[in-house]
Image 1 (tube, rainbow, N blue to C red):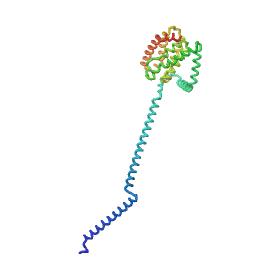
Image 2 (image 1 turned 90 degrees about the horizontal axis):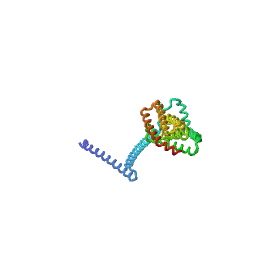
Image 3 (image 1 turned 180 degrees about the vertical axis):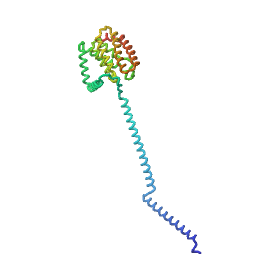
Image 4 (image 1 turned 30 degrees about the vertical axis):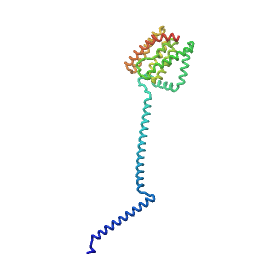
Length: 288
């Protein structure tokens, strides 16, 4: 009976197992604390490792965000530069602004003038000297013509800030006709053409867009020294109408708007009528 008593043996085995597990736990705890006393702490290592992993992941994310920000900033800078370049690029005129004859030859001449500016300045000075030479005194005539050129070319500077090209408010025609009347056809041609070229440079206009104005101002400047009309007022208004007729016909057949042409003619003739009947007689007396 006593040897077959199973519950007691079962309880003894259970107690033995619990005692063994308790002893192993106690032994492990002692080893852990001894290592901890020696300076080896597994709990801190695991925490530090976790912190390091967290920090490294945060650093990776931060570097990625910084890289993305730098890339976006670089792209924004590139786009801004492209926008500035695009804004500063000059708009070339449409094809119908060019003369219907010899486009290739005109392009070659234009490139030659742009690449040889110093030579052009020297030739202009020589031409200026030859044309003004017959008039005495030379210094006075040259000074007056240079003043007319400077003031005339600056008179269209408002078009750079208010691009209303349909309004004909300028002083180039006044000084061109007065120069031709006082100093001859060569002087009128020089003042008119040089003033128009400098005016186009000041207002950032494409020179080829103004070629009808160059042709008309050359004709008017030459005729102002050839026609024998005594009154500067009548001469000025007559040549103003001729100038407007020439450029209006050319620009109309090149495709410009008829309404803009009419508006320019009305404002230009009205403005120059006032200038030649009120300013030109006084200007002639002042120069002579």
